[in-house]
Image 1 (cartoon, protein in one colour):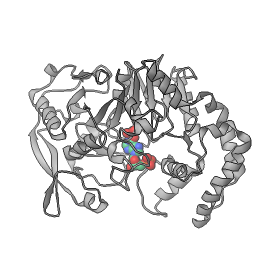
Image 2 (tube, rainbow, N blue to C red; image 1 turned 180 degrees about the horizontal axis):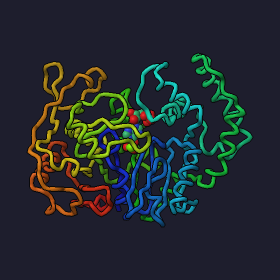
Image 3 (cartoon, rainbow, N blue to C red; image 1 turned 45 degrees about the vertical axis):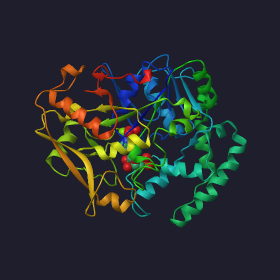
Image 4 (cartoon, rainbow, N blue to C red; image 1 turned 60 degrees about the vertical axis):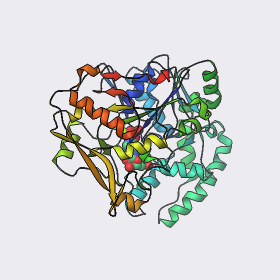
Length: 430
Ligand code: IMO
Ligand code: MG
């Protein structure tokens, strides 16, 4: 029996939502294990479009159990709102199909405010975050002063925890010349939402272990991408969690043996939102065209995504840091009709040729991509459902990518529709 973890192999927005939804048909349990409502996963099912930020994608399918693991930072108000929004779309959510880890860290309004303050430029580096409070919440978790979901079940001792948290945050606020937070306001913010989220609370580590022992198939749904990983990404222009596949174990409470097949999702080109290095970025008409054809606007923040050529050097690296067994390649159809297509195959750095992405911020900003030029294809790949439907040159492009990144393309997605998917290897069959 194999479980599958799906992770982004670039800077997020690789099309994980569709692939997770597609795989969830074969899964019994779908688990989020890191990040929070900074994610934006779009699912197109028939004539319905679902946009999920915090809930696992399995939630739209009846009879699947969705789990939010301890590695996630949870904004309880965002959870309540998303549950409500989906109910309006006809998706019913209850304890029967949703569980949230009791030990998940909560995102509070103070985290959102701090995130926005730092992004405003008056306080340090601008990262281009989603301003959801993700970073500040993870800081408090690691700083051992966070409020966790289970704390909402013990309101009398919540006040004490809030006082401890505010000792830290109000010192920061004073430093920034801002008004202090009042404990009573934070208490109200939490006490009011507690009845909406506590019904889902569970010991997720135990639940998942039971499911695994019962032979159930678990699908781990990563958010963001390996290049936004706090350790392995383009630090400091990263998110505040580990986004690589190893986090699926830690962020859910299952041991590493429970993770199984690692499916990396990569776009047939590259995009990035927010600040930070991006070697193959295009600042010209071609970049604009990719963005327009690919509808490259953020689901969460509506920001325009930066676009560029496929960077095989980067994906080759994330294949290793995430232990990727196979790739799901998405949005190949966006490259339909391009006369020439380029692939980044290595870098030049200070007069040297290198075959990896250096770790230092300075070097990451200085590398210049070495390109391989590729003849485009005139036919269409959009909506293709078998290899035979693809123009020969498009097949060649995919084969070249496989060679360069050192991993096979297991799944090829040719439109946002669930059915427009070509399967080379079923990840659940190991
Ligand atoms: P999905 O799951 C793309 C980026 C932000 C910013 C950096 C830090 O849809 O692929 P944060 O708010 O996390 O502290 O922001 O990370 N970022 C994403 N980029 N897709 C995402 O999620 C992202 N989540 C965060 O733009 O550069
Ligand atoms: Mg997104």
